[in-house]
View 1 (tube, rainbow, N blue to C red):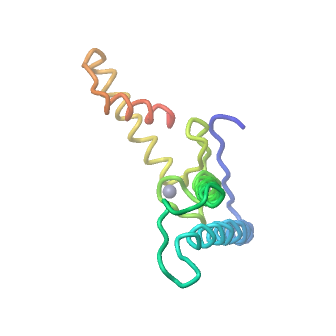
View 2: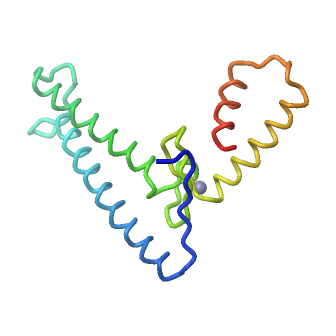
Length: 148
Ligand SMILES: [Zn+2]
């Protein structure tokens, strides 16, 4: 996929179809995530309803427990990076822009905001190119550059 790619739909009818499809995929992913969550949470309670410590799990139980948590995290990450929701604001029924550097989709509103901020930051840097940067400033600047 290209570095930046916008998916903009102008027709309200097509937007409605897009939104409904996103809802279907989002609900399916959320339902699978919830199933995994309930399964690993089940390991924390014994048949009498008492709480179990992870220290008392058998090696097989611990392995399955971690496997379920890992899969749940993968699905959460997949949802957060997908076109189903904006990586910044979490809204889903919007036109989206893909940012390859983050392998994530942003709504056009958040992307525009990030872009304006990045342009301001780049101008400020150009005015003062030799100013020392803190570690935090370097990370922010590197994030910002992906929106230019
Ligand atoms: Zn957004």
